[in-house]
Length: 107
Ligand code: SF4
Ligand code: SF4
Image (cartoon, rainbow, N blue to C red; front, side):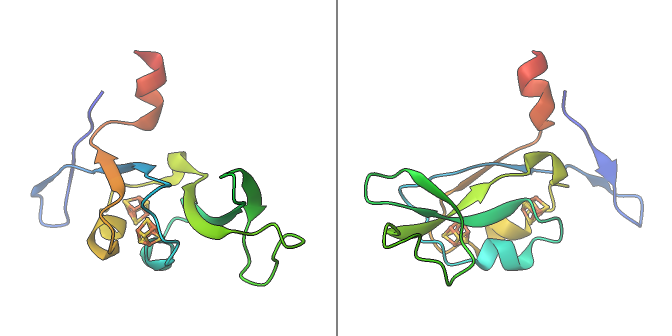
């Protein structure tokens, strides 16, 4: 199901929801997190094997296991599809879709 809405002046507006972040390309810069008003994503630490270590607060090195930081979509249902995260990503590693995330599982 696609959903469209309207802007304040009544123009048609099609939300584009954040659907994925490519973990191989993301550099964990945090730009998308900073501009998102909905806390859809958070920085997570991963080890050398690529296994997730947990939410990264910037201080914890997970007992020396931390290899790098990537952004993870942990609350996809909060997204309003504003597109701000796409505009600031320096790596172009996000994809957005114009359908409700939930409808992917319903179809
Ligand atoms: S599209 Fe907007 S609400 Fe959705 S994750 Fe990106 S910045 Fe947040
Ligand atoms: S802006 Fe792009 S590169 Fe930076 S953390 Fe977000 S998804 Fe990763």
